[in-house]
Image (cartoon, rainbow, N blue to C red; front, side, top):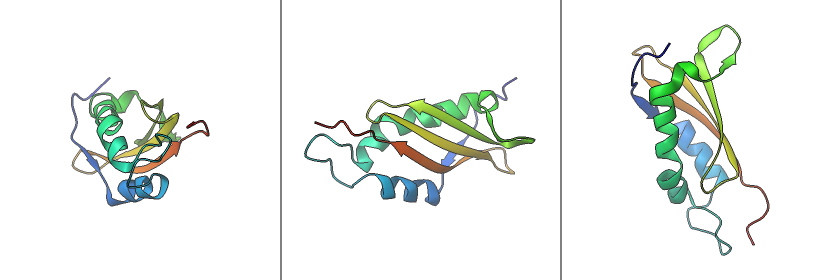
Length: 105
């Protein structure tokens, strides 16, 4: 059962995770930048949490307020995003882990 479209907010910690894993500029072999990720991956992540939060797997058994999205990306091999339902019902994206793989040649 879904609750309709929810507001989604990315936290400072989410963007800190992004900044730790990707450079601010695109790499010489096409490695994505933080801006690339925000342009090509983040909109779909927000959409998945906005309309499908209740359908995502619970991160912690018995805690339905934490959900995880594990998916492949357009620019990155895969990523995991953890979202938490806040007291006002909005979803806060609280962490990001990116699998870049090794094949950028």
